[in-house]
Length: 91
Image 1 (cartoon, rainbow, N blue to C red):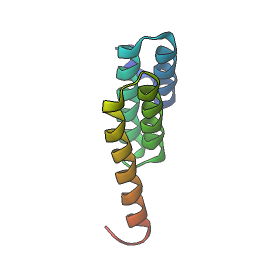
Image 2: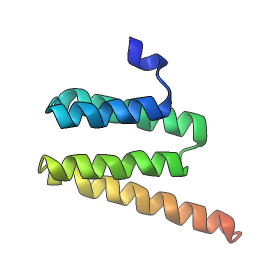
Image 3: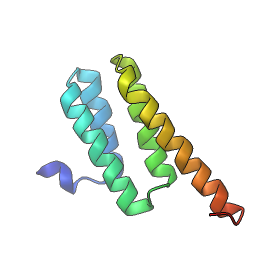
Image 4: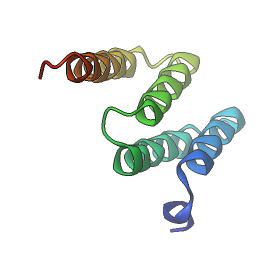
């Protein structure tokens, strides 16, 4: 599949473009791919992964998928807490 070869930013941009066109299943798939690539390339709790999660929240808000949003917010909160704990010597 071509999208597997795309870099993180290209996947994120393609997801946004698909969402803008109303191709929501494709957008969701591309957001998931971008998240996976960000986590592999930059780390589970990276700013890149958080950027994708925030973009996904915007996407789900735009299509009124409230059922998806809280879980993503919880992931971001957990990521930030883990980073704060690491930066302050707590695990």
